Length: 156
Picture 1 (cartoon, rainbow, N blue to C red):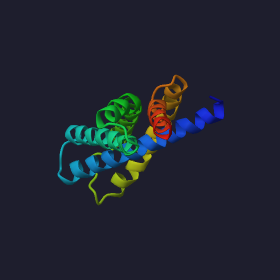
Picture 2: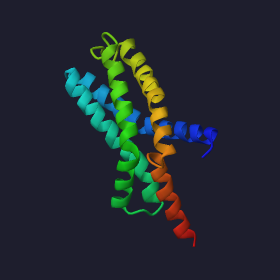
Picture 3: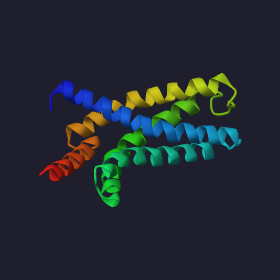
C-alpha cells in the first residue's frame, strides 16, 4: 500500500470511527450533564455509548452486505476497538483537562465549545493509530477485507 493511499485510508477509517464515537460520546455527555451526574458516571456512560454506536455504525454495512450478525460483530470488535479506545481516552482527557468543561451546563458555551475541540484532538491522535493498524492488515483493514471477500463471493 502506497504512502498516500495509506494516509487516505487512515483518515477515512478515523473519520468513520469518529462518527460512531461522536454520536455516543455526545449523547452520553448531554445525558450526564442534563441529569446532573458526577464526572465519573458521565464519562462511563459516554464511553459506553461511544463504543455501542461505534460498533453499530461499523456493523450495519457488513450486515447489509449479507454477513451474519455474529461474524459482523466479531469483525467489528477486532477492527474498531483500538481506534475507539484511543479516541475515547484522548477525548475524555481533553474534556477533563479543560477547567469547568465537565461542570458546564447544556446552556453554557464552554460545554458546546469543548465537544468539537475534544473530538478534534481525538481524531488527530487516532489517525496514526489507524495508519499503524492498516499498515499491518489490522483495524479497518479487517472490515474491508471481510466485506470485500463477501462481495466477491456474492458476485461469483
